[in-house]
Amino acid sequence: MARAQASVRVLGVDPGLTRCGVGVVDVARDRSATLVHVGVVRSDPELPIERRLAIIAAGLRLVLDEHSPDVVAVERVFAQNNRSTVMGTAQASGVALLLAAEHGLSAQTHTPSEVKAAITGYGSADKRQVQTMVARILRLDELPKPADAADALALALCHAWRADAPTGPSSAGVLTPAQRAWKDAERLSRR
Image 1 (cartoon, rainbow, N blue to C red):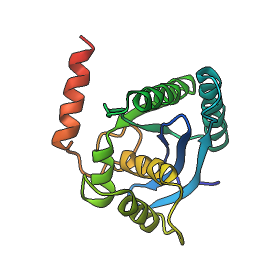
Image 2: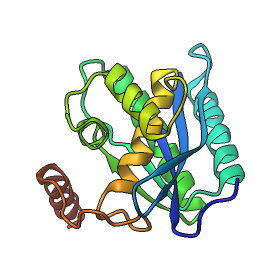
Image 3: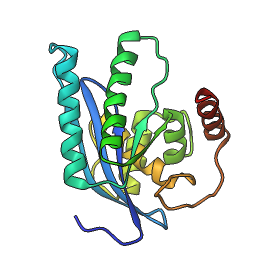
Image 4: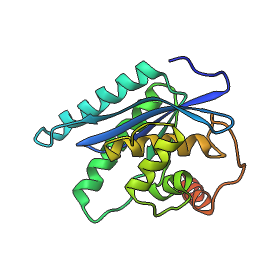
């Protein structure tokens, strides 16, 4: 798909072992966005973990090769009550970040609340609100489904709209308090 000169192409990844959402959008400097690709990479929960991760990696490689994004945005893994869920999410996230590096792409992570706030204006928005706003922003006739795919598109849009996106259009120039806290924590953890 041809893209405008002044746009950035972002691959958003909503990591998961059973369903890994992927979404690619082109975002112009004026923040208008166009859908390039949306989908879900699925793996069978009955397979061994290494096979499941290989399936996720193969699906992400296909999207990277076919759509040539400029940057990758991945949902930041955070502690949940279900330890096995967070482990699988962290493993799928690691695969996405590794593949970005192998393709020479910058990758950043964003918390679910950052994404929700960027897309809906409310950091505690529900899945339906995110799907509805993603559909409006991308001028889609239907809500993107499943929710994993909509979340991947929301991640891509959030990243492109962030002021500090390395190759994205700059719009605000200021990080939110949550973004500053994450940047500070990351900087301190590297010492």
